[in-house]
Image (cartoon, rainbow, N blue to C red):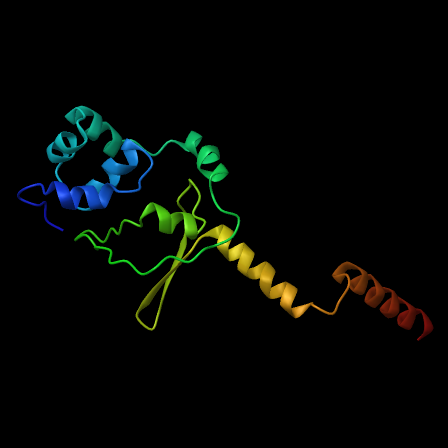
Length: 161
């Protein structure tokens, strides 16, 4: 998306709404196409602060803090309209990231199925896989015990034959 010619505080507030830190707000506003100077004025920060946030990598030390506030299971959020910037960036609102169980690393798996973008966090993928295994093994008391019993039966069959 081209940089807006004039900063719209209402639109900027909508982009930054719900984000927990000034750095997150700076990154989201940048992704939405706002100029550094406009972001600095809007957030009442120095231009250099905004620029430093945009050129530095996110700090890993925040991961434990963010993980402690994350829900244990994925949630549902009502549909929202998100804007795709010209460079392809999409800002996922904080409440959606939380419902998707996206951790501080920010890594997700994405794929397109019949024109639909599907994004899955590693934690959500693990929970989904665990649920599938539970459903398939609902009548079995212990997979480990069943495997051991099968191995013993095979060993006995080989010893007899």
